[in-house]
Image 1 (cartoon, rainbow, N blue to C red):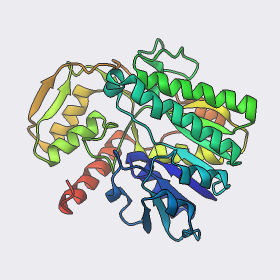
Image 2 (cartoon, rainbow, N blue to C red; image 1 turned 90 degrees about the vertical axis):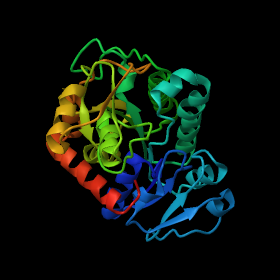
Image 3 (tube, rainbow, N blue to C red; image 1 turned 180 degrees about the horizontal axis):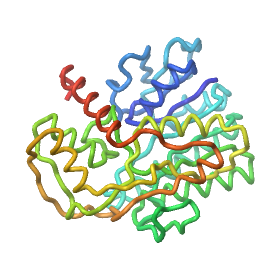
Length: 334
């Protein structure tokens, strides 16, 4: 099996790359490094390819080396490889994921998160890709009217980012109807874990605060801390991607929550940090534009349809996250 991971130097994408390679997949990565970090691929046999000409030329197709195209995912060389039927699967994680930024720059973020993504889907359809696994978001729900939130809940995003993700999901369904494109949309709740620095636009409170602890900075707490989040360990998200790709039945743009079904407040997360690290330096900040108050997903549809459920507890996930950060600090990369 051969796959293309867009955004493969990012947080979730790099974790997926490590797992797929360990499972014996042949993978390519495309990442323009606007938010990705080559350090996250440490331990993998990678070759960085910075130009379209190289992407179109003779490269290692053996699977022993991971080709990392440091390009936009819609650059000509990448699209022509897709059209040349180089890939069985595409895991599309690349995005401009900053909710607050999407509020300020809706046109710019719509180009990447919607228009370019639809172009990638079209290319995948014409390149006979078996299935596209699209990274969507629980932000499509906005302030959900039902908690825990099932996929059938009315989607009412309160940020351009959420609207962009929702619109891509609708395109996925249309392209399945009109062109037969196999795709699945995974609505991630709040993902945390190794290979994410606190400055990332994906950063959850856990990641931001871990970054602050290990770099001796103040922990920024937005609002009054009573907001709650369904925190999902990145290893479970990786498992969801692989499960969705290999699901035997047709998937024509169906959306699935990737969640634990358990929510925790920022105040309670802070207590776990205090228990582990002692006294903390806290900086109180205003609420962030576009943020929702509560997230908690209903994962029963993924469980019954794909036999998928999350497995990693918050305690174990925090231990894994902090252990990775200690290694990264020891290697002087933070």
